[in-house]
Length: 228
Image 1 (tube, rainbow, N blue to C red):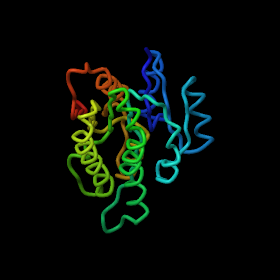
Image 2: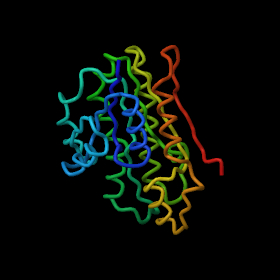
Image 3: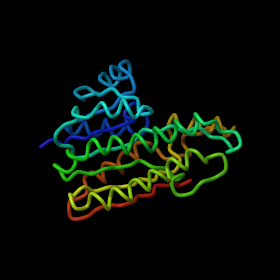
């Protein structure tokens, strides 16, 4: 029987690679797009997928998805994220608000809405975190704070939902060759060489491994680092 997965961030990078792999093997996808125009693009990129519209930076828009999710979900994968580097002395309130909203509040709200369907399937929640979710460096305060919060969300959720058979995995990839990483390099004033970093295909395959883990075990955390 085909499994059903709810994904954010399916338009690019890790999320797009994961969506392609899951769809290629016959699984059903429910994708979240930030706008009607983006939803149309995702529908073309991932034929057969169900695409829901909600801007992840708008918690109220996410709340309106209640009742529109499938009755059964084998997984929810939070792969979307935004980043804005800067010193604490320079970061604006909007930079803090957007990163916390997209990287932390959105996964919390969307997971809550999906929990009945996850419990029905004894499904898996995968939160694609970051090395910044384990340690914070200069210029990374807002992003790291959002990712540290995402780890806390995962830890609490794991303990709460174990009684329902729902598994929760935090995935901590190091620098990965995505458009976001190219933006980070530009903000850091560094040359970007994609070959130095993890291929998003590799991270997507790691997520698939988490989703396919037999039911007799749970993988709580997985850290991936570039070999370089």
